[in-house]
Image 1 (cartoon, rainbow, N blue to C red):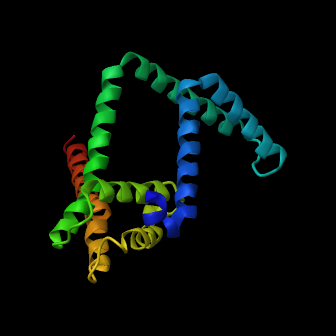
Image 2 (image 1 turned 90 degrees about the vertical axis):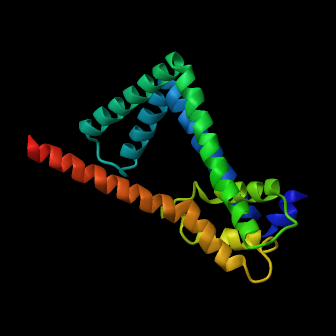
Image 3 (image 1 turned 90 degrees about the horizontal axis):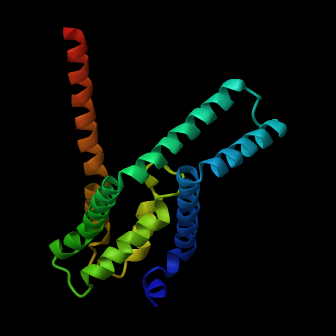
Length: 198
């Protein structure tokens, strides 16, 4: 009922997003925890692409593939010996995602709207994330706004939909992007100064 009430217009995109997420997670699990299987799959895939003449046969490409597989093996070994770190990362990631999803509820309340629960808005924002995060678009530009408008059209009433989308997208995407750019620029300048002093 929830899907058909709020997500009826974007169900194909939602199911595509779920499918891509499942495939991506499955690939990562194989890469990290089944190194020999991942190596066999990657070698077979590379050999197939070379046989189809989509890629030229290069020894350097095979060496890079082996080096990449070795990094994933090291990651798996690290996970096995540092379980507390993995739990901490999962907890922090969960808190981050929860705060991003709940920001839409705070925008909803800031407009003086009520009647839709925080849990419903959190689930709707999570549905947007599931639908668009794995699509091969930079920053999921355009599609995020379309999906937001389709899902939240019944939630943000009284002409508040467009402005709520701008505020929510600003908080969830553009603000972190700007902060990250400032921090990256500062770190880069700091590193250049340190090199110059040496």
